[in-house]
Every structure is written in structure tokens, then in C-alpha cells.
Length: 145
Image (tube, rainbow, N blue to C red; front, side, top):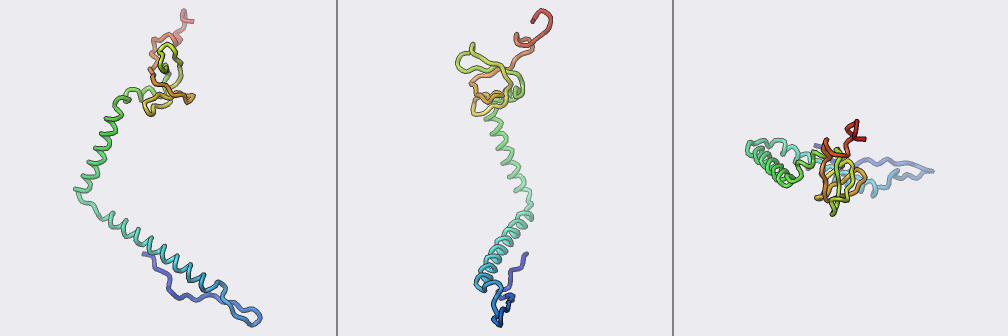
């Protein structure tokens, strides 16, 4: 708990040619003290809230949080299920095409987003398939030159 500043603090004064004056104007000093005290109150409230949350450790609350996280993960996995296999292709050489399967390019699959396949250059294609080891594009040596 942080203590608030007192309402009345001694303000340093200066003297010049017989005239005494406040180093910091009294109104400004009081305004700054009020603002600092507001911040202290806010920080104290946050600390109190945090300490209350740290004390709550009932098994039902732990279970409900765990259950909620598990349900969220299951929901995410079920939504991602169509792309689970394709996510393993990321970083691999793939064949990309749009509407015409005969109009394709080869490149590395960078990511899958919004139902599209994004290759290294940043272009998005609607279709993608990994290149297999027995594909014609793969150099096998010998007669395949």
C-alpha cells in the first residue's frame, strides 16, 4: 500500500532583494500533489484487486477455467480440421494454381490463411498440393536430365 502525500507540504521559498517568494507556485504544487494522490489511489486499488485474485484458488474455479480453455481448443481444432493436413506442407515445395489446374507454378508454401495458400513471393492461390518425390519436377539423376 502506497501512502498518499500530505495535504500540506512545505514549499521551498526563495528570497531576492528582500522579497520572499515560492520556488514553485503554490497552486501548481497543490495540483501536482492532487494528481499524484489520484495515481496512488488507482495503484492501491489495482494491488488490492490482484491480491484478491491471487487468494482465489478453489478447485471449481480451476476446473471451470481449464474446461473453458479445453473447449476453446477443441473448437479451434474442429474449425482448423480441413487444413490440418495442409499445415504440414508449410515450408515444402508445392504446386500452386488458381482456376485452371494446367496453369500452375512451383514454389514453397509459406502459410495458409483465409482459405488460400500463400507462397514465398506473397501470392495467394486457391489450390495447392505438395510435390511428391516421384514427381517429374524432382531431379533423380541419370536419364532424367
